[in-house]
Amino acid sequence: MDARAAVPARRPVRGADGGPRGVVAAADGTVVVSWAAHEFELYFIQKHVGTKASFLAVVVGTQLPDALTKSFVYAADDTAHFHRGWPGVGFTHSLMFGVVVAALVLALTRSRGWALGILVGHWAHVLTDIADTAGVMLFFPFSTEPITISMWKHAAVEGRYGDAAAYYSSLGGVWDLFWLVVMLVFAWRTLTPSYFRAVVVPADPHVWGWLHRTFRLPERALLLIYQGLLFYGIGRMVTWFLYARFDARTPFEPFWGGPGYIAGNDISDAGLAEVLVRTVIGAVLFAGFLWLCWRTFGRRLWARGYDVPAAAEPLRAST
Ligand SMILES: [Zn+2]
Image (cartoon, rainbow, N blue to C red; front, top):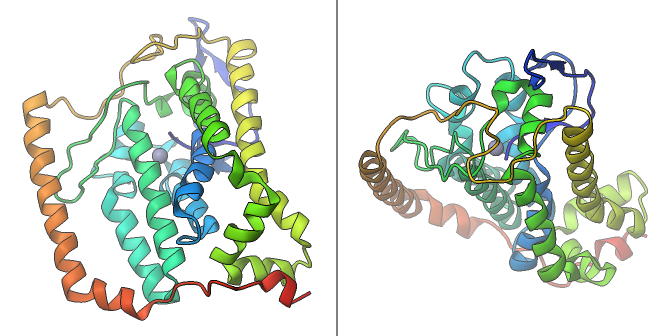
């Protein structure tokens, strides 16, 4: 799932064939955010991490890979390769990148909840991006082979609007909807005020407390921020889908590998055997590297960190 503009600033130029032509829009100042599925996944992750990780850290983690890269991607010559490959910024979509950022956060803040939240959020984003044709270099730098199941086309080459239209004309849009349903069926409880009060705030009393004090936000406002990401995701999913149907008018092709009107954007032509061998080697080396880091300094870093106090009630205490 890749980033797109939250607020359209320019209309796409239509190609001669009626399909939307790409708008290279890196400099147009629009806000870059990720696909809606990443927002729906947040609450599903929250349900499983409970108070072990900060929800806000999970948000940062899920946004990290594309927030750092996407505005450059649309301006690149070879968008897919630049976004997901090497040389390029594809390393932001590797498991290693999440580990490095999480370790830095742990070293600087000592907060286990923030380190864990960033790691889980980042890895969720990386694993989700396996679904498009460009894929991700999961075990970079030990393997630069992208892993992909090619469920839909990586379409950044079409520019922001063409990218959005293509995504919501493919199984990508269905994937968004799937995550919304999963979230509403299995994790709806995470949206309730009582859950927010009992789990989300105690998992990160410092930052929620800081928002509460600095901006004089009552608990209801904080709850709205927390729930708001879901409505933001729904809003974007619906409007981009309508944009694709009624403005860009791209054909809706929710079939594996669609949409057909866009050329394939895979960044590797390796055969299955090559991909398998490189990936297995990459995975083994990555696991070994993690183990080595854990033994040499990770363990100490973790031991130095702190869990949140179980009974923290920062909102009431500071009112
Ligand atoms: Zn991404």
